[in-house]
Image 1 (cartoon, chains in turn brown, green):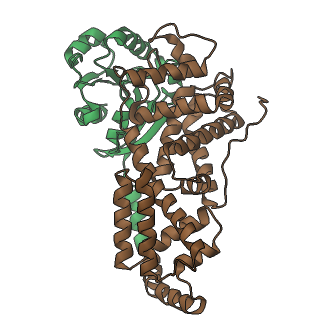
Image 2 (cartoon, each protein chain N blue to C red; image 1 turned 180 degrees about the vertical axis):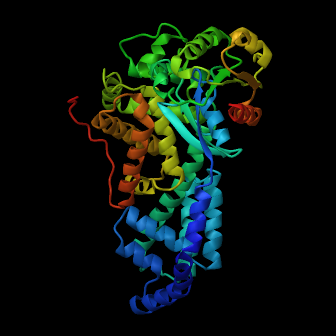
Length: 311
Length: 180
């Protein structure tokens, strides 16, 4: 059934596009930029239009942009130049007059920034994940201490290897083996949550000490890192980033996405009234499905709603 | 209709369902072994909160492998998973000499449980690639495995992160079940 659809659309699409172009006087990219609302709907529209394009110049442009973002070179002064180049190519190929369509130039380059900024973010997050936690690295160790100090400001850590780590939900006396496949990304996610969202983080931490519904804060946090990374990688998180980031997506946006997920997971967990931690994988899967469903709605805005603690 | 019934028959192929239980301290490598058995990627593992389960077809058996978190706080729940276990697989980080005693104590508590009576035991001496790692035979001695008389047991050296040794252990598992 699917192949039949692709077959038809392969031949029908150019016809429809040609017809619309003749009647509206605008190319598809222009129609998207003028017609779709700002944010996810517009950016996703531009993205799929570009990827379906059969123009060799556009294909080349996409390859070029992929290459730059995969190598994380879509930054700083480079960024403006790359954006201008991309816009120029499209203006030329689609024969658009930039003097008349100033609004198009503006919103189209915004779309390019988000689409390839997202791709670059995937590469950046992945490289952070691949750095293993190293207890001989002073910078890594510093971050670990920072995490403790931010989560437990009134309780000094007695020694580097200590049973106290279990109070913030590490498995044993030394957290170094708990980051595993999430590497430094897991630690930086937790640290960002603890420093930038102090209130919500201590709210979540106190839930993790709940006598009936308690769980291991850090371990669950590292599992949430894995979820956030998975959502980013398979592209479902685009809705979130395209709606949230006003500038080039950066690691900070990813941390914020993580904080949102962790905070919401905690709420969901408590609502589920689990009998014990053994229900984690089940509840985790249900939570992930809920998130994926809400990411399907392009208009969705995700924000941490700090509620009064009632549990 | 014809195709459907063939498919049904294929599905109903007489595979015996077996229940394997993977236990051991945290950071021993249980989830990595589970993923190796299921031929999945092992570069993205996170600490197990709760448990993971996977079904693997091997040697005419359908192996349902239960991987339970090894953190101290989770260990009290281990016993909820003992019932109907066909083989107990105990994973040890051979390089973690500091916790050798702890892992031994946990193991003997398992062996003393009524619900695991006579259940064959496979011990994976994992992380053989690390310089401080004990060899399988040294680990067997240190854990006192040769004194076990009430069940079939085996120790298997492995480096789960490189996928080596895991299959050999599972071959023993399948053999010991056929004997039963």
